[in-house]
Length: 182
Image 1 (cartoon, rainbow, N blue to C red):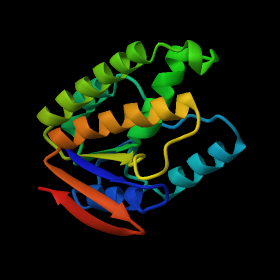
Image 2: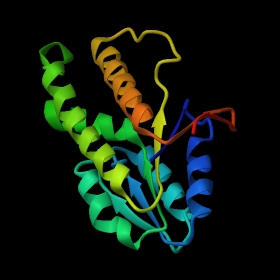
Image 3: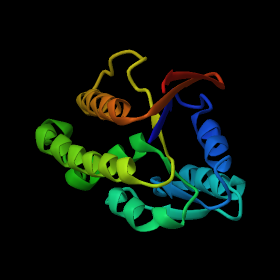
Image 4: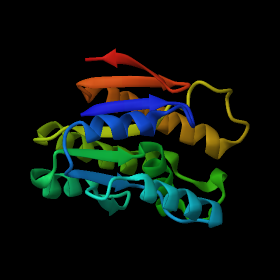
């Protein structure tokens, strides 16, 4: 399991794509984004068009440990883009449109942690490299609203779990990668 983190538009995905492509043509790209508006639809389309034609895509953000277990035998590499989007989608699956003040953040984090633990377990027994892309959300200021603060806290703890289990880890800043582990 190789973790690649950094800020928005830092070059994380580019690095993960390069590393995955070096493993061979049979790459499974796990896309965790969902279309929420026209801008997101355009971003997803651009990502799809830039991936090699030999790469397969799985679109989804839950039960990804199962996906990795089931599909890894036919892969040279797996790339998951991205953990923070996965966390966002899992959070909103559990909360819907209720106000942040009414959300049970302990229960939300327990569900997310269970998904992440299963993902880590699958990655650790996978025969091919698994590249996980995530955002480093702790470099900025403390958000001014409860939901954003709780999201940042959960994402930070998830990233720590992933980094502890990863055999390699990269931090990407302004398109330059720094190998932090491995």
